Amino acid sequence: MEIGKGNILREGGDASVIACGLLVPAALAAAEILEKEGILIRVVDMFTIKPLDRELVIDCAKKTGTIVTAENASVYGGLGSVVADAVAQEYPVHVRHIGVKDEFGEVGPEDYLCRRFGFTPENIAKVVKEAVTIKLQEALTIK
Image 1: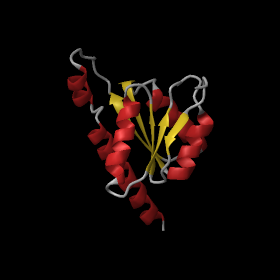
Image 2: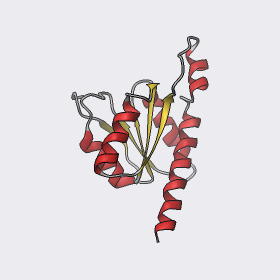
Image 3: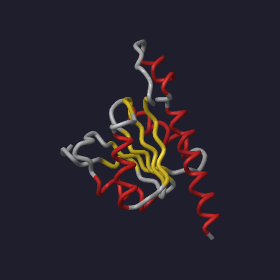
Image 4: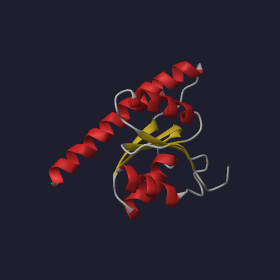
């Protein structure tokens, strides 16, 4: 592990999931679910958000055409925001966020909180499928 560098944990060309913290294993499990449906995703562990590995983020955008960020924190000002900002500036693609939206946090058992905020492999797989569908629709519209 190197500060400011993300790690590619799994390669795929249909979408990239850039995750941090608790959601890295969930993203890997989502990749397994999606592979059974013929969707191959790149999974990146972005364990440092500042500094962000912008080079890797842009590589994900170029190679997969869509990005889903996954973090067990607020998407505002966190991983989702910095990834969207980097992509918007350098290589615009569709970006979706999984994380806590603009609401107060809760306390409770981890499994409850993961279900409550959509931090499950099943939800990550669902969001990725939605993002891939949008990417394909946009590709058809452009042609």
